[in-house]
Image (cartoon, rainbow, N blue to C red; front, side, top):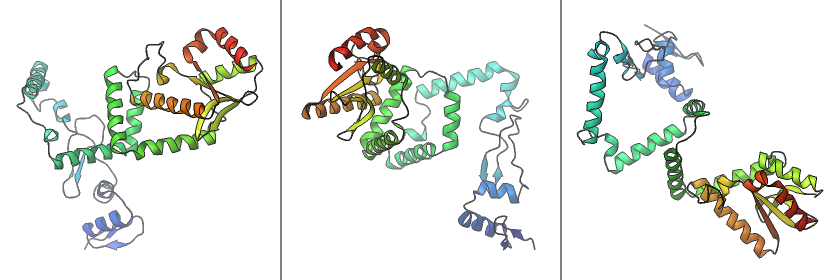
Length: 295
């Protein structure tokens, strides 16, 4: 009789099924890993098309697939696509036409509760897949987003924030914690440039000053004046190409600016705001205005 020994705790089992249940429940090992270690001697099968990637795992009863989805088309002699690339292209075009004509209906297009729950489950699984997130992030590094992609991301955020207000609350709390811990140390390029202007005219200031549970970029204690330096994109400079909030991050930032303005108005504290465009393109005006109001 064959004996199966757990590689973690060395417990013995008389059947692979017993070992499988023990390893998955006790040690939280995946069926994929257990199958590879005990049935395949630690060797994960590769896709037989020769791409070098791991083959998809089916189950402990069926093992692994021979090919990654659609990779069988890469194997010469398996179909007519390899012999005649034009046939392959025609098949692709035919499928596109059939989809547009409504001849094909995807399971995700059904408008019922079961389908909606399934889609949300897939979304949650993808969001929590950190390895997948890293791969996507690395592959998109340096690749500019299209306007369509930006709008889609913004719309997705709007829906998430609307359905779960706790997301916005958690983001605010995390931001406050980060600012309390690192805010005094880390400055943006724009903030460093503005701080240099303050030093140039000899004005003492406090960076990331907390007032009424809000953080302001600079505080001038001698004059009791708060200063915000606003990036053109996120704060929607009316004199720039970003004069209207289109994305969720812009909407949140503009709303937050309005709240800060109201707080300062109610507390009779002067709040000065300077745009990124002015700081970069006409620093002499910034210096002149600061001298007039701070000296």
